[in-house]
Image (cartoon, rainbow, N blue to C red; front, side, top):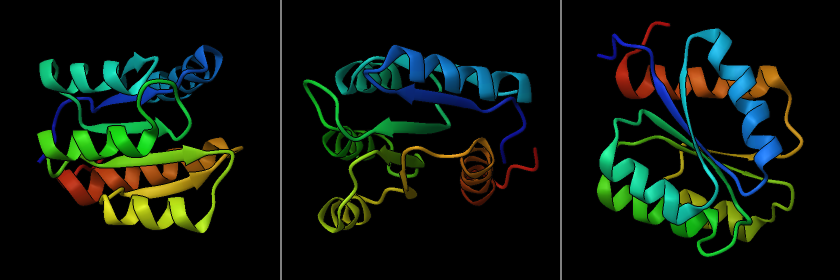
Length: 129
């Protein structure tokens, strides 16, 4: 059971988008960690306590899917939510096979995103926040 403030790793090569999400989640009591690409996200998960990862699909060095696969090798139960402005059936299927908690299309509303994050934390950690 998760009792502390959950930590969210926000991974996107768009700094403005990362900071916007940080501004959404921190006032709601979440601890946020920001990564500019998939390799940075993997390093963070190796060294810090992360409860959930938000991943952009299209990033340099590692795609969101490649990052998702590596994160799941490190921490099987870590919920990962993939975000993309260019979703297709292949990406959705590959994300499902890689055990993404959810795949969401950008743009996304604040309510949709906070709702799916809360659902993932409840299901994974029995979190009641």
